[in-house]
Length: 109
Image (cartoon, rainbow, N blue to C red; front, top):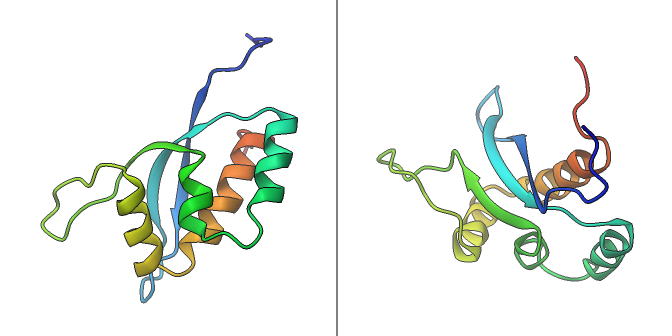
């Protein structure tokens, strides 16, 4: 069913680059939905800001991020900043993945 008012949060599984690995690692993100005007303002406001600050505005939670001992890492802006520092490609991958999930939704393989 198509709703006139979308759910405020939607889920997307993004495949993030892991240096030295031939395969990317999946992280499930719960993202905050934005309408056209809010999305335009968010994208325009992203210029010159650190990825962590920009992405924290649209990430609600995540699953699939672990400590070295396998313990899950809950989403916080501080944990996001640590992930982005450790994995340099992740910022652009999450930004692009958010836009793709929001604008394109599911695509058939």
